[in-house]
Image 1 (cartoon, rainbow, N blue to C red):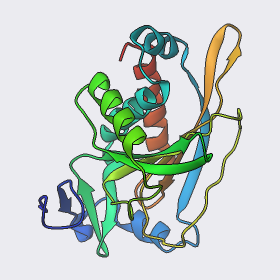
Image 2 (image 1 turned 120 degrees about the vertical axis):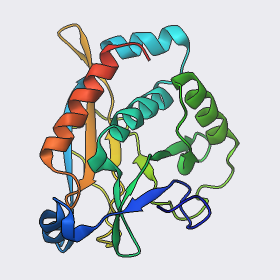
Image 3 (image 1 turned 180 degrees about the vertical axis):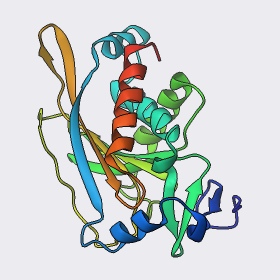
Image 4 (image 1 turned 30 degrees about the horizontal axis):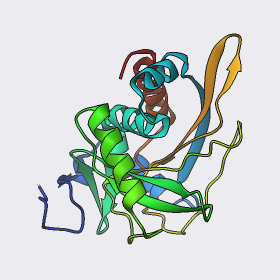
Length: 218
């Protein structure tokens, strides 16, 4: 078990014995792919969630980041990463998100640790985003989920830049502009994940967990 202070990452993880790991063959197949990541877009019903955050006066963006992170942390496959060529499983994952500077219209990348409650996370994340002066504070660690909201367009598909690093297994979550259909508020939502660790069934599990969470209070 790696502990805080033993590596550049803040969160602890365990190294996987790949010889006795059920995903060993699948991991190796996709690890060597030209493009090992895949992206899926689907719609989420945020009708109840949107009402709830408005009543509580929470930031919609930060509330959604919290909710997605909470759900994704409950699915083991989203917590696998490559570290120094080895497969590892993190105990928990924190957040990194883009935040627009309204004056320059340039985004900055903000890192915020996950919190126990939505209220605590939203407050902490907004403070960090508003106070950070730098656009980039350095390379992101492996122990984050990346968020890059795209609220200007209600898209049906999205693609991302590729650094060329096949062992970058950090999941990336996006969403577009929400819209109304048949009296419900819908949100286009995207998940990009490394196929060495995440399959379609796991994206499906996340979609179900997330929709259930959005139907309830935060």
